[in-house]
Image 1 (tube, one colour):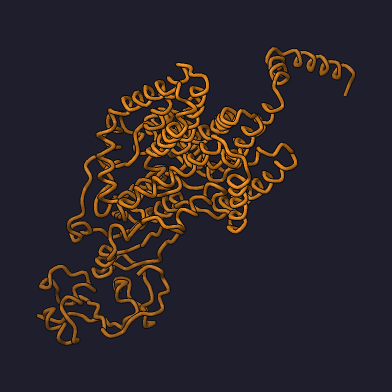
Image 2 (image 1 turned 180 degrees about the vertical axis):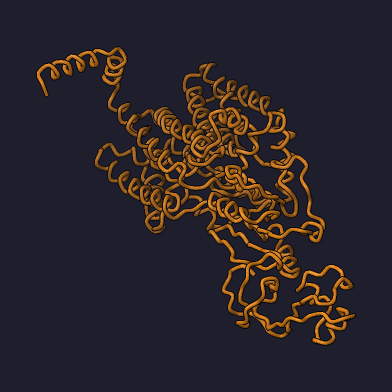
Length: 592
């Protein structure tokens, strides 16, 4: 490098160093305290963990529902939330505005990731405010930053990260209001609590927690009673417009909800989810949690902070269990508010040690376990792979015009269409027993399978949850018995595509008894494994005569040959004649 070039670079660096933006940044960093720098580091790490592999896993059903409903008009969103969902509308309304950035996987999930990153700062402020100790705030921020549970929901197009953020903002202003009695803090507490209630019903557990805490601590905060009563009344008034719709949604949950009644194992699994979601070595998690609880409740360190964090953890669990006695609703993601109480309990317990070495001795094993969980979730914990499912069907329909895709159940079309809309492969679709209303303004109900499949040469059954809508496999049974040949199934974890071709469209194959079939003689799957033969209809023969000749029934012949009218056979027609009494035990397919 020449001397002139060196001089030019030196001048450039000097000018760059004097850049106003850089100078401001350097001045800002110099003003930060050590704790604030550590918080900044935690935020960067937490953001990296939440953005890493953000689009690695496929959009699944619940996310696709969020996207689909948010693409409607504001009025339709409000109407459909009441008709089809169990959550309040705020997240969907915000997501609608967010979708101006695009509806790709990264864009739709980024909203949750940003809320989750903001929560790292917020839990620091809450912990610092409650314990009046920056160290404990930092510990709480570290626990949340590395939490696999919150990282998982930071990467979902759902409302749980947004709920977490609003709850922490509300808690921050609530405890400031209790300490200082400032009217502005009470106002912000009211507004952010209302926002949390309009985000997810899990906010009720938080409201119950702080209400019980305040009443139990009334002697301590008797001067704040008026402010608390006015604030709770204001929150109720703000929520009042949604209350009738909430009851409508609640009645629907009571009538039809998929959760099973909780057990002791369910509660334990929820606590383990809070601690380190899907950690493969449960015994280590239990030992760590037991140690935290022993240190919290046995070592003499009593105070209102311990009462608060204990209530924040256990009130949501207890109330959810009580409600679940009538209608099961106990689910870890619905209790994400309680996880914040656990993290603050851990922070307060670990933070009581003044030695940095002691604090690290507790935090480093937790961080190590969480990294194992994060890696495990990234590699092993799969979401429904609708990306691959749509790609498979798009490839299948290319050279098979006139086909029909059936979704079992109908709402399975939501995540399918999210990906399938990117392909230039048109195909008719139908939900069973009816179409998904978010995709079909005038949904069709399936009444007659004969009419549905009339003239359809190819059928793909996309199966997600068969037990919910068709436990007897009636659709598959109809295809098997009406001349459709089942081709090779496509199976991917929770999803399966059963691939059917009508007998006259199926590829040339080898029959179960090893005899090659002609190009237009194919056996429906229900008869695979049976011996069979073909028979050419003679002059004037009826289907009854042929059935008697081969000791079978007219219905068996009609099913095997896709004959709708038994009087419609003609001379020279080749029929499949199954020989009853033989079965197939070699299939090995997990689906019937």
